[in-house]
Length: 242
Image (cartoon, rainbow, N blue to C red; front, side):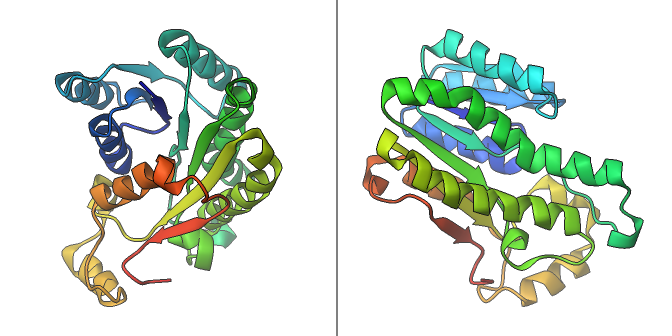
């Protein structure tokens, strides 16, 4: 049985991906930072599907905790076949008001956390002579978003990291791809009014928000043997926005 490690798995998209991979036959390592109850509930759902699962807590902005997470997951499951870098953070704020500490936190949460996880698992991928890395970026990493300069920069960095590593790691049998979701209907949108979400949907050619399950389906596909000749790509799940 293959194993997938999903960072930030306690959120809306992360939970959908964890369940989708479980239904596809994977054992699932669920990472969370603070939402222990959500992570444990997700673990029970996956166990009920007959798949192996364990939840792990780590702050990926701390190098030692990211390294320990990689070690714990490998010890628990024996190997990791797919790494999904989904952990991140976002906040709307004018660039002129962004303090350096906030800038560093957003880049650490979204971009440097991916570096740490890939760096921690790469030796195992080389030993296995294969592995799949999926970086979860954003439509704002492709086109930018006002009041989200740090987030846009971090997500754009994930796209550049994906393309560079795809070239560097291909001969090691390691594929690296990126998913760039658009507006997805998750609890992260709770701060927006119905009118604001309606106006956003008017900018989407398909006229609606995406579903977490639609991002999850893209992730399972890119990790599958059906995508064995696909690497270095950015798959937009955005209803036609880009």
